[in-house]
Image 1 (cartoon, rainbow over the protein chains, first blue to last red):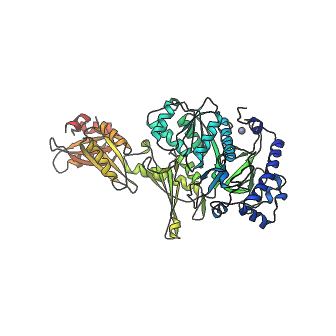
Image 2 (spheres, rainbow over the protein chains, first blue to last red):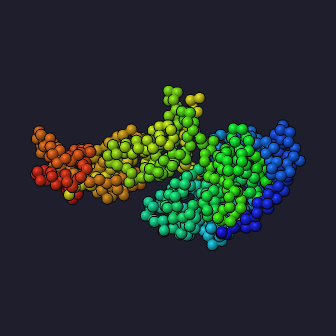
Image 3 (cartoon, each protein chain N blue to C red):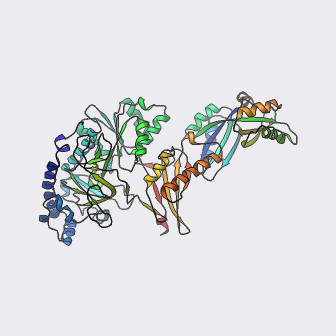
Length: 435
Length: 142
Ligand SMILES: [Zn+2]
């Protein structure tokens, strides 16, 4: 048991949560049908009327929304209210195509901040804490999301944004930050830099970190927890569904509680679209329950995960989602084999390397090639050519076992792989250039 | 005593070697001996300098720098001198990873730097056979 930001909702019984959801979904569907022509057309085409949706059980009758719909409807096609009622936008980084722009009314911002506040309290945050927000501020949702949550909790909030690591460390040490919020790769980088500057993990006052916005593994969690001397919590969200805080980890660190009073989650078969029974692995689909400006019904996240409803040690009753096991956006098909960056990360951490890597996929003579650049640390660098090459060959062999295809591994200098917004560019696929 | 060699990771990119050498020049560090090994992915620059401590501080910002102990053996200026030294090491079962040569400005003597698995053992066996070797203090002088 622990502290909750909104205990009456976070520990509500299953029946109470269902009652909240059933009441909200009827209103939300009517709001969308009345205000969003794009989705009304989809519903009409499927022959579904707002009155057909009387409870969350009826959600399965609704049509799906995909990222392609969001691109097609760009910029205002899915807007659920007058622009004059909106107070903010955020946007995806657009690395995989056209940007997605999400709109927020003040109600939407408040709701989102509450979600992030729940995540911070679940990470043992309170008004006693100093919360360093090192997610990027701007169009990216990370910075503003955790910032809003941190202020709601009453933490002293350090709006650092990402980058300028020397300044991050100076404020962290001088102002005694106790909670760090950023991407896991940036947390790992801050840990490395602290060690380089001669700090031990016990020299900082940090107790918790809330890390998300990119895939990370359990191995990476352990290495970050060790290097910073903290407990590391996962947080989940998409710009499309408001941002981080849709789901968050609690002290049990075994899956993320979905804020079910605001988001209804389904797991579907990504090929057939059929809803799968609880505990099945499949694609996560979200339906917003009380959004005004950007209400998305049955939005397909592309994240593959499992939902579980067993009793949690923390006392929260909301359903838990596993860490996404892969994302069809991230999945690369190389020589016919499905490859996820998270697999490569696991090998690197197992072999004692930092999770700083870059995958370069190309096509040479009609055959796919995969090259992996891996940053080395000083203790891994040898003055003997053969020893460095042996390290590359050993990594290649471990990768071949994990991936089922053989990549070429190249050791590169520390910090030579570019990080943008604190988010490393993991994959460069040059094959598209040849098509 | 063996001597300390610096090994610097140099990326295979335009200007990287130049930047490394410039950093040493700007710091007033004299390169006594050097060799570079180029692999497909990066180069390994091996250096013996007039001030290794300072060189490491200067280069730490640029790249990775490691230290290794190596032997610098003085060669007699005659045919067969290197053969004789290699024979001594071979007889003592000491494997050589790599070697390179340099000339000292003080005595115009020829020296060969050996990177071996066990620098202390190599030093001892060479000295026992009358082959002179340098120590760190000599490097500052020559
Ligand atoms: Zn829990």
